[in-house]
Amino acid sequence: MSSTLELPAGKLDLSLGQQYDPQYDPLVASTPGTGQAYAPTYWVASAGPPPPDDGPIHGDIDADVVIIGSGSTGVSTALYLAQEHGIQAIVLEANQSAWGCSSRSGGQGQNASGRLTRSQWIERWGLDVAKKMDAEIRAGYENFKNLSSQIDCDAVDGGHLYVAHRPEKMNYLRNEVRVRRETFGYDTQLLSAEELRRDYCDERDAAGAMLESQGVGVHPLKFTFGLMQKARALGAKIHTASPVTGWETVNGVHHLQTPGGVVRAKRVAVCTGGYTGQALNPLLKNKIMPILSNSVVTRPLTDAELKATNFRSHIFLTDTRTLRFYYRLLNDNRLQIGSRSAIRGSDAEDPGHLQLLKNAIARKFPPLAGIQIDYSWWGWVDVSHDMMPRITRPDPALSIWYAVGYGGNGVSFSTWAGKRLAQRVAGQDAGQEVFKLPIYASPLEYPNLFDLVRSQTFAPFRRFGQYFLYKWYWMRDEKF
Image (cartoon, rainbow, N blue to C red):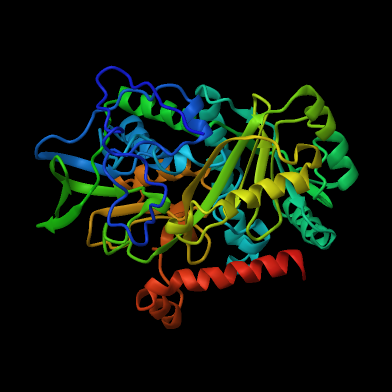
């Protein structure tokens, strides 16, 4: 089910000529399109009209700072450049404002970023670095929480439930609770299956859960629209229907070709996430793996269904599967649930991927088996080689920065990434201790020669490897 948005006065409506392409795949497409309509998500249908933007680029222009991508990372970078550094940036967006992850995500703002847990930080970098990482990620979460309280985005500050989908996963959660409490000082709790079902929801696929008090669920598109309004009020420009179709650097100036003209920029920040095309810039080619995530939203639950499923909270949940399910009861009593599914964009419309989510609803909440699905969509997640984001300048000789690689965990941290990226672009990062952390101190690279060869030479075959990896994950999660 889709919805047509009423565009504000003065906004160029390109959606009639540029329909949404459900099979778009950043590994094979040169650009994500020009002025394409939004994906038919629940967020698009319920956000109201987009705030005014600055329309497509018309003619050649000069700019100090250009940001590519108008999601929460790009728009927050523009916001903080203006608010804290007095720089009015130009944001170039290929399609509609917040067209990518920010209008398709699950809206789960966790005290996290990337795919690694805090215990894995200790294993990888040692306790000292892990504690500094925790302080940084938590600062980002608190910043997001504060922003969500300022923006009308249906924010629910209730925490996060990490659900063990099998009894064997309880020891894993028990250790995660211990690490968070004893090492990092959080008030994390371990819940039995009975406590979860009694106090939160009757999740029949659960063997127990870890409760974190840090977690804010938001309407991600309303949230990004709010950031956009803040940024434009401070002088930032957001140009939609303006994809970068060519990029040439001449004497240190970046010539960014768009359908409407060339933008000549002194500095460029790339914030394109899972929609980063292979041809955008060599610094980003083959540096992330775009992964599809599918989501659905049901019709509103009846009072009888709410009672049968014992939903007592709008707190969001994720389970312990490697290809995890993420789900929650929305403010209007609809159930939202998502997970990974298709390998290629060309396969995204296969009904089997929708059935995967329908089956998950029936397994987790049997009274809702067969419930009507009102919205179904998918979007690309940016996964880095080491499952952690990068907010960095990959080549000191070039005035190019990027913030990508959230691995599906960027709802809260993307705004902090924008703040840190703005510092870096403004030249305010020199000598600061925080920028020695792994997510800031190194570019997106592959850790050894084998992985480099696998990435560059065999890039066209990565989807085959992903297919077999998904099969292995399923066997490990469900059988072993």
